Length: 314
Image 1 (tube, rainbow, N blue to C red):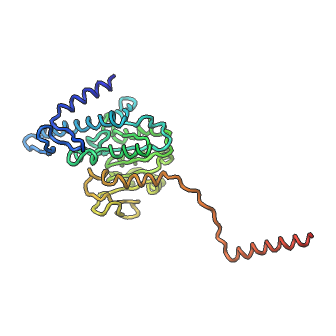
Image 2: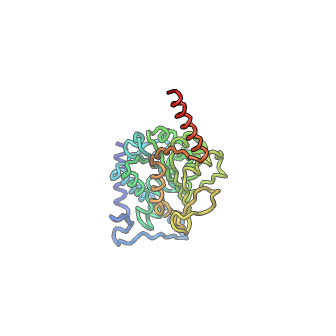
Image 3: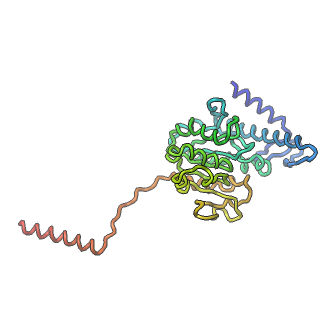
């Protein structure tokens, strides 16, 4: 009942906001049809902050309604009032794959990579909805973390969700997308729960991540695991997926953009190709023997010796 009443209240607040989303996901004024324009009033900084906070709240509420009404995702509340996450129905029972999304730190909540990108471009560019839809077409389960909700640090939130949910899931493969500070929070989890993460997570996609494997207390084998199981997309003007940096830094690829907020949308297809390859069943290697000249001559001698022994017994 509490969830239903909250949804009703949220729907009413959406209708009172002077802007609305078009069918294409663009934010426009209800009367003039004009796009939202960011304004900063140096004489009223607090008023500007309130306006942007209201806009962020509107976008968050709108996305939550899509997650719950259209995508049928469900809120899963964490113990000790530590906030909530969104999951697809039966997510922890799905035996195939579980997609985990971790957004950047700040004012981003479940389902949103960047609310500013939602305003400047559209929902498909700034929200996690395209990632969710892609996973659903593959029959994967979905879990959306909410590291900026509940009063805990992102690191504590990620660790709590791992302990309470992900570590107990039935998924054969867990794949993770981490944007910005979300990458640092995941590497912090790897430091704390190394054995569990390395045994359960099949692949990690870091998108303009804030993590640093040399500054975080990561073991040597943990760095090796990251090199083998992760890809890092970094901001670059190089074409998408072009190599960036040195091999010492691990596999680093270009996002094809210099904009942090647009990076998740820019490399989404590449991320899912990486995941698909990572969880694809590997064919059993076909055994073969290299026949050298000396080995072949030895085999011929053994055969002749066997034949001679057989003739002698006759």
